[in-house]
Image (cartoon, rainbow, N blue to C red; front, side):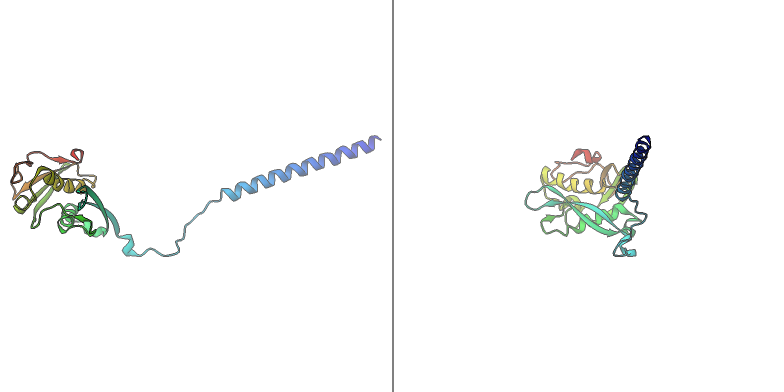
Length: 189
């Protein structure tokens, strides 16, 4: 009788070991399946050199209907931003939006005489057309300034903008509503 009890205990222990082994095996298998490490991602389509050179920039224009300032994102070749990113961005603002629902803020005929970053202030020297051709009224003039400030302060190194007209500081729009005595920062808008 003791022999049968001994065999029964041995068989019982073997079954427990088999069951525990199966539980451990399947638990580890599920962990491996859920925690697989993908070593390398291979895109279906190769990225071209041209795509690697592109970046997205943010330009701000006036919405024709609401008169609010709206963002227009554009993809440009990063090489165009290397020499003078500030001039390039302002040139794009002068050129105007691609979206038909937006209009440019910078007055017609405006040219850039000079752009220079001093510390974190971007000095922009515009031609006389900047004030001569601007639509008068404080609200309209604020929108012009806002499109410029929001666009160039997207660059980390620019915190504010100083506007000059033909190299002269402390000028103002024709109606005198807004003068260029102080710097304009993004916080103002």
